Image (tube, rainbow, N blue to C red; front, side, top):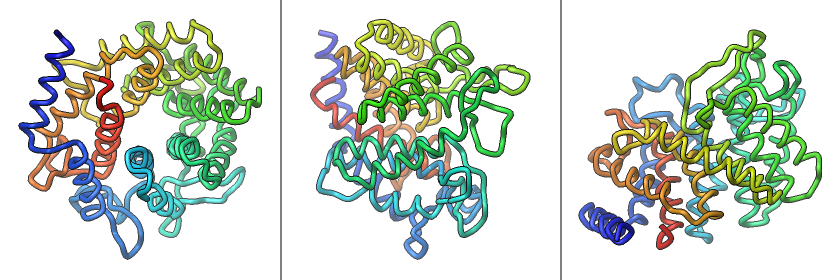
Length: 354
């Protein structure tokens, strides 16, 4: 009865909104290209309001969201080309400086900027997902380049772990270690090199030891050399570690990881889902959704995905302007559009399963 009631409510919400999921996806993608994309440079603007744009063009971070969203669009429309144009834009952030090439935080031709390990990792994750789907060598090549760059951020200060950004040796974050685990595990799945699994396990153990709260969610960072914890808790940090546990279970068949994944999943729901909604950062939340999707593929329990289905409906109803740009603020950002593009695409791919 509960499932039937949920499905009926979902059907009614779609019907009353007047939008199919596919229509939403195409509207958001069209808005991204018409409002944020600059054809003359091949770059994007960070927001639709010049007063909120720190620089003429977007930082790399929103493109980290857009590249994954583009992959999820191609999951739904395999003959379309959403991903390659975004990767072409990302090349404008390429920086070949030693110790290894990678992508910097802002457009290279406009300035030299720092390189964040997590920015690079999000791109690698999307490329590995795309390679798994298409077997196109260029995606694997980009992921391999980033994997090498990522490993230059690892050392034994603080007991291990990867720094947040290249030129700051004072902080090691969950957001640069959780994605690092996912990349190492994906490479282990591809080439069965024990070194990749060892890398993943070292990062996994360090992150759990240093940054996991007793409840199961994750703190943001450990400061060096003091080892003081930055106790901020964000959905995306818990999301990457949830996904890491599921992948470790799939690769090792060790039930300990599946048990931990379920504990983390429940802890995340209890911590983040308040007053029938998730916190305000769409992209942080969609990274948590990735973890829940990974868990669902194993245990087939749709309870957490149903929360996201409700959240997606709420956002479309309550946080969309007359141009159908989404976001909780009057001005709208590229990263929010990209995050919701991914969220709706993932939910559409699960249509009929949850």
